Length: 144
Image 1 (tube, rainbow, N blue to C red):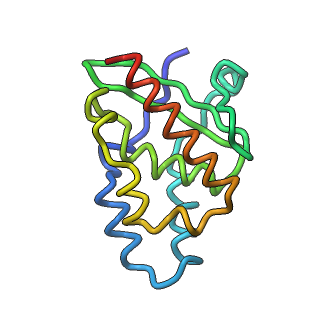
Image 2: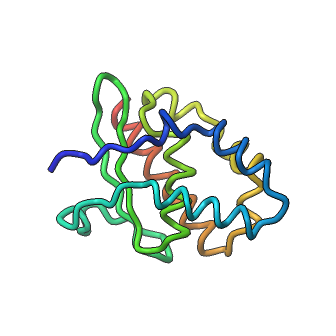
């Protein structure tokens, strides 16, 4: 089944997310924005919500699919939890529509630090976020 494309990494970039989060004074507003990001992520076809695409290590169910097109990795992702869909959006803004080399070189820890994200997530959500990043970096390494 072909990938359902999304605007993350092109129309919605890390700079956009950093700029927007900078407008909010408290984390309740930031969480609402992150959840709204998740609403912009197209739903993955149910036929892909299988063990083949399931990400291990997440509290919620997360599925990730990818393909290489014109030297860039396109990512499709979904979750059964609203906040996790938003976190996927945050991650896809950094990695989607990028070359494997760009993905591997991107300093995701610095990005998360600028957002001030990790300390505002539960330990299990933080581990899930790291699992998303590790899966995408593994996809990039395999494609390089």
